[in-house]
Length: 343
Image 1 (cartoon, rainbow, N blue to C red):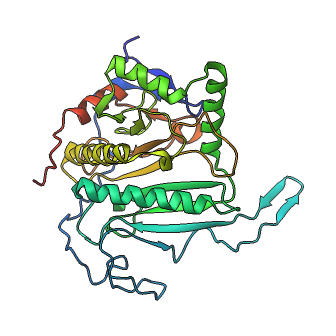
Image 2 (spheres, helix red, strand yellow):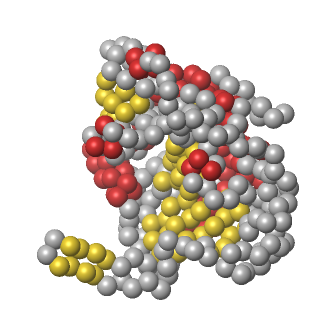
């Protein structure tokens, strides 16, 4: 099969879903949506920013004069700790109350920065904060799942350019995590090894989709990628969650996270928008020996800094589809410089 020319489907080993790949469509004329490109020049401190140090947030609370990361409970969180947990069932209509806690993590007091522009040691402080929050929130009896994520860029619906991410901790386990648990457990029971670990070994032999590798982590474009420049960071050692990293692994994670996000910025020489998330074992007191945590990036840009990929039509009603192949995307990202285009 000619992956670079012929339409084909690819299987996602983590979710059991398929993606249609149509690489021949990259030759078609394009008159798609073009987004406005915002100015990237930002101040170190912005008086009107509710995430900057010493400023007052929308809820009326004043931020401390923080110097690295700053975590607070979201003033307008999608989940509430004291939420009603009653069940509702009436014929075919079912509902269940959901408890949870939503946190905001400011990565830096510097309003002008993004992760790729931060120093490795400062990114490691962010990682340490993620770990501390995962462990602390996971110890709560009513918390079964913790989702750490970042929406970067206005195109992704990010309401504030200040460098920050979020954590949603909730009482139920979301659908995607349930799917990934099912397929990892199935493989682990049949092979007594990690699904992602074995997949990673295969990718390291083929080397077509590898972007960057260091002593403890690999950044790659997954074989089943949906978004044009979708990427994934996978630890070489199987770990169920980020709290199991040692100091060297945390340093390696910070280093590869910086390089990957620099490369993404360099593709179109812009602050590359994406949604990123860390998938790891649930925190419901069950054992998950099959889990191998990983971090995924879903960027919406397609052909330039202003052309956005939409999921519409066939993708909404049938299954995901992409034009650029995973191999083409990996080569594009891999060959960009490790030095940020602003420098």
